[in-house]
Image 1 (cartoon, rainbow, N blue to C red):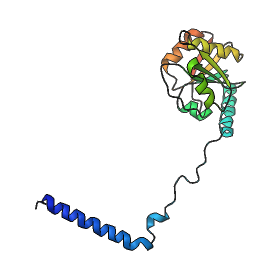
Image 2: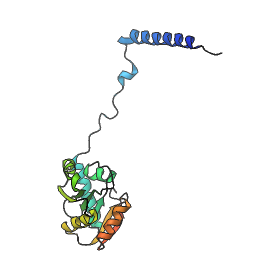
Image 3: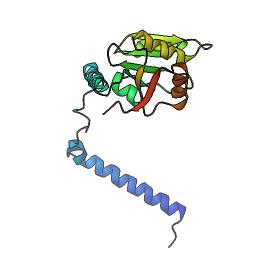
Image 4: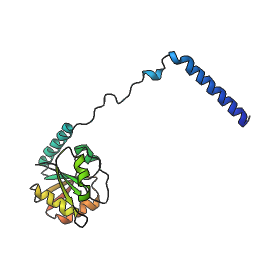
Amino acid sequence: MSVQRKDFLRMSAGVSVLFGLSGFRSANKKSPLDRLEPMTGDVVPITTAERLTRIEKAKKLMAEQKMEAIILDCGTSLKYFTGISWWPSERTMVAIIPARGEVTYVSPAFEAERLRQLISIGKDVQTWEEHESPYAQIVSALKGLGIEGGNIGIEERLRFFIFDGIRKAGPSYNLISADPVT
């Protein structure tokens, strides 16, 4: 049995009217949908205090593993520890969590002001210009934190070009894979 277009339109209009009238008729009745509550109603945002607790736990684990710092690339680990969402690009922006001291950031100079607006943990932003090496700036930031050498954890998602650049700029550092969230 094939349905003609005009019959289909007539049936559709009839069904629409029926549904419209039934909705009108039951306007005084409560629908089961009216009893639904938002499933995220009791979810609270992650606070800066909680992120600081995460950093303190990471520092404790770094001390146990004899690590001087962890370097975080853009992405989930950066968000987990600092609350900063930063889109990864070819221009290196990292956060350094030292075993002792404040979180430090290394950013392209032209992005520094935007980064400062997002920071709620730490305040030091080291910048590099387009003609400079971001990896040399990362090494400089490590030295500024009193870290001249030793084990530096790199999160597992750190992009290879950043790892390779740091390795070449700072041969006194032993870069090792670290899962900063555990």
